[in-house]
Image 1: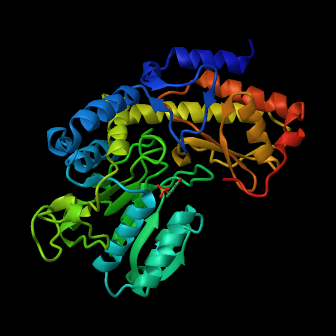
Image 2: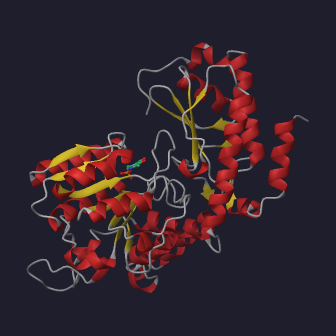
Image 3: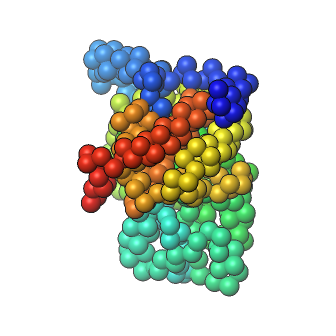
Length: 413
Ligand SMILES: Cc1ncc(COP(=O)(O)O)c(C=O)c1O
């Protein structure tokens, strides 16, 4: 047995979270490294969905809105997510997509900081975030300033007075780099601007303390590290101190103070309930609720410790096993600058990811040349990472990725 394989087995044997894997249903023999796009299926979801569909919907029909507390689900699920974000109850709502929540939050932020013409975001931000920032800027007559997170404190010192909102992600979705969320938040708030975090790649993977850090607004998705399923509802966090002035544009009837009353105009509900929009996607929301039980009793600091052990080990494997085969590490090596993913650069990334998947190792890629491995510490083992990197070495050595079926496509969805 080679040294890395032995180390993997020792680390797995000493893993205090090893039992959590039983909370997920993973196909035998598959190494699933795509939890940062779509988390694995939690074992609690299939029985919960059978109950929701057959009993709650099939028998209960419309009565289930009250009898099964469907109506209360967006805030109930929101609070469950809030626990993972360091948010006290009553500040998080679940529903809609991240893009919708982002639009809502950006517009509300612009309204909360009138007279400030700048909306800041990361030039490397996820496309939806950049497109929405541009659109919201057009709507409100603002400008988008593209400032990388590392340059933000300096920028704010000189131009801070003009900034309405800074919208950033704690983890770069391509490189896996983790930024200093409390420090960025402090700098933004010191300038009198609002801090809006997109937590898609952090929620459920990186411990967060939104209340303690003074974050103003946050959004994120339910389908990556939260494992809520494809298209799972997203979430929006609005700090309690901002809820009264949270005037968002999508004023659907669910956010009305008296949603069933005969009112002529829109009066927002008290608290986070005003951030509700329309009828929630109940099946997806209840699947997400069941999925979140995978975090019951789980301390996110321990998840983070395991995640760092896994990503550190993956980096060691990537340094040695496919060493000299054209791969270079993109993710920072320093643990405190690393989210829960490892990205490698390779000119034939697309073909390599396809070839890996054919042999049972599922990762993903980002054009033009990044292989992305998402590391969910709730269900992955060090041995699986060793297996993945061994396969990476073997198939690139044998040039299997150059077989005609793996040739680069013009676009990747
Ligand atoms: C960082 C980030 N923001 C926003 C989105 C868009 O999310 P949605 O498709 O739920 O609108 C994604 C999707 O992957 C993402 O990674």
